[in-house]
Image (cartoon, rainbow, N blue to C red; front, side, top):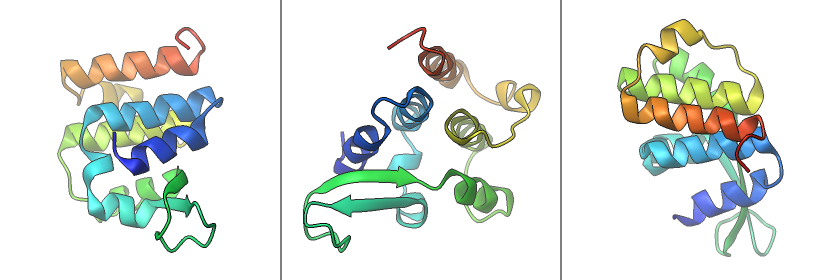
Length: 127
């Protein structure tokens, strides 16, 4: 797990919807490894508190709305599956609107399983 992923999990801790969305993005294997995503839509706090990145990253948060807006405006090129996973994660974490009919028919079996796991976690069926 990368330091940013660990910091996202630390920040989401105890908030089931945030935990589920971060885990979904981490498990899908793409978004949290893309510099164009992490540099623009993840804010971090480091150990010395000045945010300049010279200390260990302790906390991190995703600006879900900004990420979805960029995605919708073509500023985050990706596959349709990646697009749907990001939109579903943003909906779980921040309530951004998503068409389940569109999103669920546009992902593969692996990502569908990850989404089911995320929904179960968010609803406290898995903790």
